[in-house]
Length: 122
Image (cartoon, rainbow, N blue to C red; front, side, top):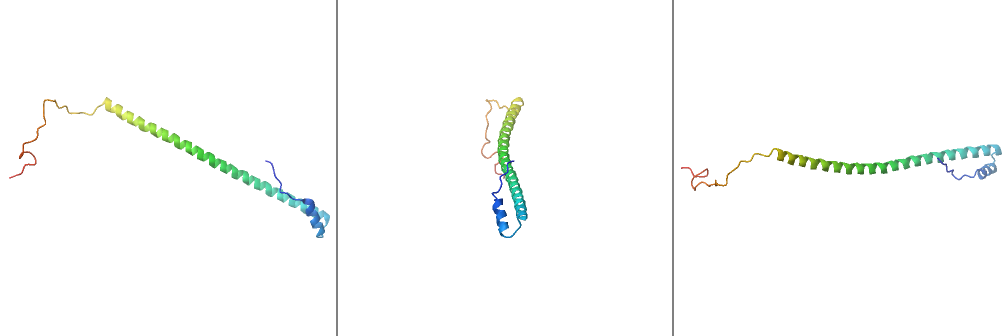
């Protein structure tokens, strides 16, 4: 991982401390310590951004995978429905439903008026 340092002018920091009355050795030590702290902060921030970027990439990949899975499920469901319909028609052809055969010479006759189920009772 490449590190991008926060711009920090250590020389200007040391001169500022010396002008405030801090001994030169102590000012240099403080500048070095602050520089190290800023570098660690930047590394931590870069790691967090990398993790966040990985999470975003994972979300995008997950959405794509879910969409692909949805399409595959639709195709499989359609195939199962068509297969079931084909199986039903195949079974109906192999074992047809019994149908009563009525010869063409017989006619269906209606009962004469006043006879049958709806005739008035006396």
